[in-house]
Length: 148
Image (cartoon, rainbow, N blue to C red; front, side, top):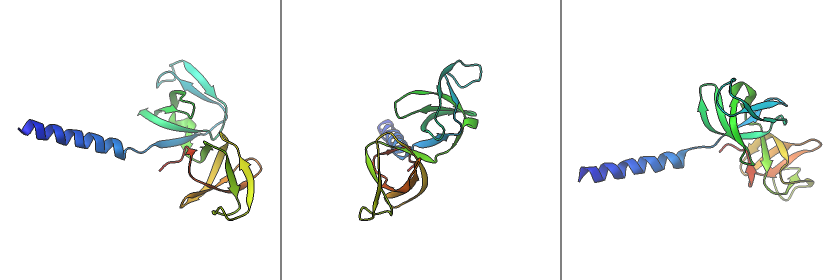
C-alpha cells in the first residue's frame, strides 16, 4: 500500500524536476574554440568552432567542463574558460528587424534564418539585437539561444 504511494510521489518529483529544468545557454568567447570528445585537455579535439558569439546549449557539466550541443546537434566538451554568458541568438526563420519593439514601427532589414544576432536588450516579446550593419528589434519567437 505505502509502496504504491511512494512510487507515485517519486514519479511526481521526477516529472516536476524535468518540467522545471531550464535550458542554459552560453556564447563562445573566442573565434577559435576546441570541442573535445571528453572533459579533459588530454581528450582529442572533435572539431573546432570558428565563430565568436555563437550560441550553444549546455547539456551536462563536469567540474570546469561543459558538454554542449549546438543548433545543428553537434556536441562535445568545452572548457568553461572558452564560454561567456549568453549574448547572442540565432533566428530559426526569416524575420523583420524593426526600429522599435512593435510591428507598426519602421522595418529596417530582413534577417535571414540562421543569422547570429547579438542581444542588446530583451523586454516583453521583443529583443533589441545588433548584426553586422543593423541594429533594431525582433520578436523573440523562433529564436535559438535565448535563456528563459
